[in-house]
Amino acid sequence: MSKRALTLGNFDGCHLGHQALFRTLKQDAETLGLIPTVVSFLPHTNYVLGTPGEPALLTTNEEKEEFVRSLGLDYLTIPFSRELANLSYDEFIRKELCAKLGMQAMYFGHDHHFGKAGSGNFESISKKFPEIHTRQLSIVLHKGERVSSSAVRNALLNGDVARAQAYLGRPYRFLGKVVAGKKMGNTIGFPTANLEVEPYKFIPLYGVYAATARLKDGRVFRAVVNIGVQPSVGIMPLRIEAHILNFSEDIYGQTLSLDLLEFLRPERKFESLDELIHQISLDVALATDFHSPFSDKEIL
Image (cartoon, rainbow, N blue to C red):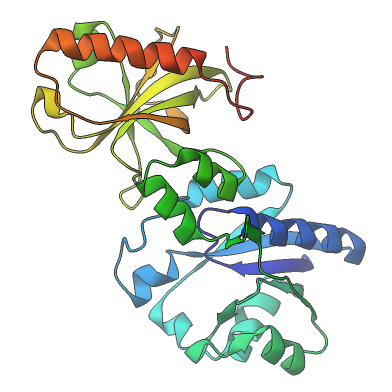
């Protein structure tokens, strides 16, 4: 069985606080000769113990795995259930982490706890399992504010993309499949790729964003992304659609990722099609001229 150093949790957002934990885990695992492993619950623990969809996910499981593996760590999931939640922390560690995953070292965020009644934490586990190497990291702050998934959500709800990026250390991303829409964009000269995302994905403030679009083959283009209900053409179900600049290929059915770089304007209803077309032209110009350290070196 593989011998692992691991950290365990929901890790929604994989923000700077999580990343500090991941870096320490990886560095120590190399010294200890163990496989650095991030173990995430699936689904989010609140969806089992509370209400499904609350909180909405900053990172879906697919997005989380992609990011964690990009850092050079292994990624595993544990199916979460009420039965699992009712296990004592020591039984969970023995049955799930040691016996099944080969855990020999465990890393904790500053307030991490789990097991029945939340009794498993750095102090109790270190005392109960002296043979397991344990380490706890301090709280991570950004300009005096605690970095958290809630802080990222609040920033995005206010259209504060820069603040969300500061907490995440990267742009906020949508990853999904391109599906057919009503082809209204083709009619007005601005074709769009409509993105289908997982049901519980967090949706930021409705409006128009400068973004980058990454195709399955790795090519990256500038894009204008509209998130909302399209009030100018009649209220529609929520749509996430991207007008990819300098691009005209058929990508229906392909996986596409959209990184939000800047909030350009709120969604609003236009009185005429000509007014809408004029505004979209202005949005494209702003997105074309927008520069970001997260994307400029790789855009086509």
